[in-house]
Length: 192
Image (cartoon, rainbow, N blue to C red):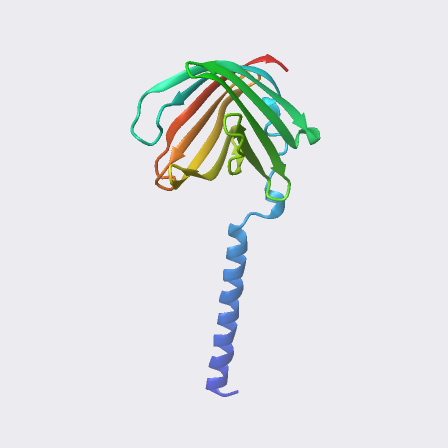
């Protein structure tokens, strides 16, 4: 075999080896489908009836520091064996009576939750937020139109205990670099 042919075989072998190594390395960075955990019961803590204290920021994304407070109840029931739930919110504050409804749906293919909210004031379903729970904290994010522009909306469930939890919604108008909380709720269980 000539030196040229040997060099070609060696070069081809090295190229094939590098290609295979790159392919295996790329696969190693992607979690296997079985590596995703079943999060279908992540919102089970939320099932029941809750007393809620809600604070809403007046005029979000304007630098406002004026908050309004409301008190009310949240009733959440399981649908589809816990792979979905319906949340109904009623609260009263200085601006009167507030009612809202949230639908939570679990997608077993993506292992993520979807959250869609509608308020009785306008009866319009907002864009669905998607996300998951990690280390006892749920985070779902959506894009929403707000005052003529598109912003990110983040919903976070934290400090989850058997009889209480915390919810916070935040807006970002800089693609998630900074977040401004605008809806904060502390919930205490009334009944399962």
